[in-house]
Length: 270
Image 1 (tube, rainbow, N blue to C red):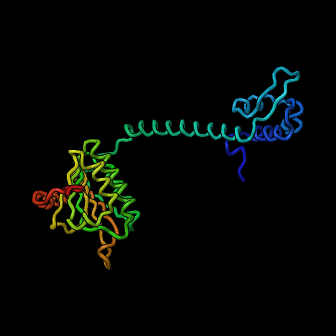
Image 2 (cartoon, rainbow, N blue to C red):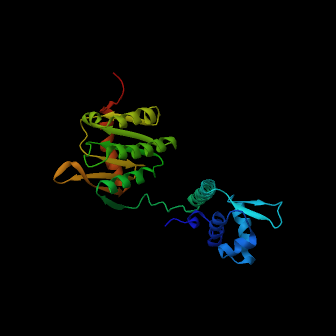
Image 3 (cartoon, rainbow, N blue to C red):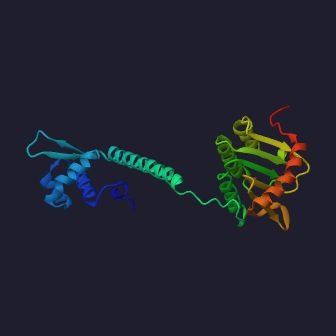
């Protein structure tokens, strides 16, 4: 059951405010009795909820009387207080992250061989987006088929956002895909391409029939390879993330001549 404590009030503060709603204008002494809050605490509690804007005081009367602010107004004020607290906390966490990014420098393992795998469309998409976010210099993406198992609109938006962020931080992005894949993409993906990526000189897209697999090479040292389902090649089964500079170099040596022979993609023309 929801309570005023969920909006930041203490037990005593909640009891005093509820009691004020029942009693109407009343003195601190009468309120202490009605709320069962000790007299030694009642003035502190009243001062606190007055700070929250939940109570108004009639200072001209002797003894001073208090009245509750209407619930709609009081709850709106409490909600606004909580929003400010959450915004301040979010800003604090962002500052902590900024500080830790500079402090927690990972050891450069670019020359180490390491691999991991994700199984299933959701985890596969998460892995790809995660690795794209690490790119510092270059991203080479090759797409041979559109997996029916992906929510392409959602995944496309996440991938586009990461590619957009990558080019904004100076990463060169090259996307090579089969021509028939272009027509299979949802219209919204094409719109995101035109609006956010195509205008950037660090982003280039080409098409080629000589595309047989789907993979991504990041910074020339890491390769994400999509593994199709063994019984249905239109479905994505898994993704292998392979960190090996020699293997990535070998992949790029095969990619380069295909890229040079490919046709530039011009969505939206004609």
